[in-house]
Structures are given as structure tokens and as C-alpha cells.
Amino acid sequence: MMRFFQTDDECLIVEAQRYCGCSFSFHQLAKCVLRSAKGLPATAARPLPLPKCLPRVSEEEQQSYINEGIEIAISLMRQGSLDAQLMALESLSQMSQGSPSAAEMIFGNNEVFDFLLSFAPLSANNDYEMERSNECQMHRAAMTVIANCLESLHPNLESSKCRDALLGDSLLASLVNEISLGHEKPHEACQAIRVLQVLAQVSAETKQRIALPVGEDYRHARLGELAQQLYRTWEH
Image 1 (cartoon, rainbow, N blue to C red):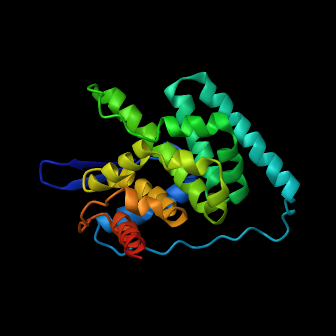
Image 2 (image 1 turned 30 degrees about the vertical axis):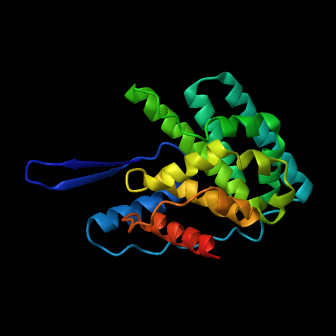
């Protein structure tokens, strides 16, 4: 999380705080943000390959680890508390990133898939700021997992049983709405674009059923990059 404070002498203070995730990745990202705040160029992350002396993990062991991770996530989901469910989503997000086998197991578990879909459309009817903030966290985390899984399963998604559920009218409308609000909520819009990008590639009907909002000159660099890719997909 990033926080910004302004002192009496109009000096801007930038604070970076890690709530979850990899500490090394956080350190690299925070260093880039803090250097940019000082007007310094960001430094490229130095790759750290795994030592060759480490034993290789077999495919069976990897599948076992993924299955165990999903079972732990399900256990957290069933606890019902916000913190536990958010931890479950963050765990699924880590597992699903760039892993087709993990993505297939996540989408193949009905309980997990239904849980993800329950947070996919963001409710706009909550007037309480704290609850609305909690819903936004859950929504963003769920959309990240869905986007990761879609990108990992993209070549085989046409035959996936989850395809029709993801192409529902309510979810598509929610995705378009989030893209239109990208200038206010860029992080949510990024995940919405990632999801819609894959759905448009696996279903030609997607382009016919919805109309994208007029393209904007987004100040958020990552959002602008993803939006350009999506509009190019829509044109072809």
C-alpha cells in the first residue's frame, strides 16, 4: 500500500507498506516508486535464478503442492471472515500466475470457481465506506485470480466449462463499467481489461454483445498499455 502525506512546507512524503505477498518483490517495486518520487530513474530488477544445486520438483510433486494449496485456500474461504477469505484469494493469485495446471485446478473446483464469481461483479449499493472498501479488496483480488487463470488457460479455454459462466451478461456489463471508470479506479480497470481481452479472443460474440467505452488517455501507464491492446483486439 502506498500513502502520501504533505507537510506544512509542501513537502510530499511517500510511504510504502507491505501487507502481503513476496517481500523481495515488494522491495523491488517500492524502490522504483520511491526513486520516481525523488525524480530519479527506476532501476531494472536484477534477476535471481535458482541455484542449479537445488533438486528439481517433479510434475507429480508440483500437482500435489498445487492441490494442497487449493485445499488450504478452500479452508480459509469457509471460515467466512474477510481476512481469511482475502488470504485465500491472495494465495490463489500467487498459484495461478503463469501456471496452466494451477489455473485448470482452480477453475475445475466448483466451490472455488463459484466463490470467485460471487465477487466478480462489484456491488454499487453499499453506502458504508468500510464495507465498500472491503468489497473492493475482495473484488480486486478475485478479478486478479480470474485474469491469471484466463491468461494461463487461454489456448484451451474454448472447451472449458467455465467459459459460458464467464460470458454472462452481468459480468460483461460489470467489466465494461469498470473500464469506463478507469480514470477513478485504474487497478480494477486493469484486471477487467485482462479478463475481457481473453474473453474477446475466445468468443467472437463478445465483441458483438458489448460496446467498449470511448478510449481515454489514461495517466496510469499499465492501464494505458492494456487498454491499447484491448482496443486493437476489438478492431480485428
